[in-house]
Image 1: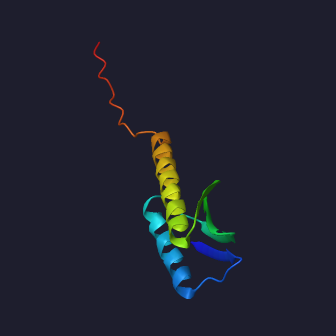
Image 2: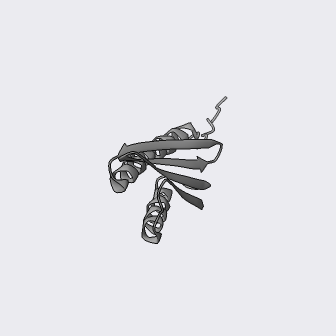
Length: 109
């Protein structure tokens, strides 16, 4: 999965980037395969906004969260994304037809 992390109006440290990549790699257990992820962290006044965009087969999922600090904003956006991935996984699972073996009835004359 390709991961892109960007910070607007502040610099991201290597530890922050590695934490974000680690959390995003955790998302693969909820839906597989994830094609790519983009995280944008924006400082607006005293608030920090975290936007996450995940690309999966034929869909793009988005989540965002705003908080006074970076960690709660990112963690909230991750929780929202987990809910979306679980919902998508369950929806796609229900769409798959169940394989039921067909029993041929004996025709007696």
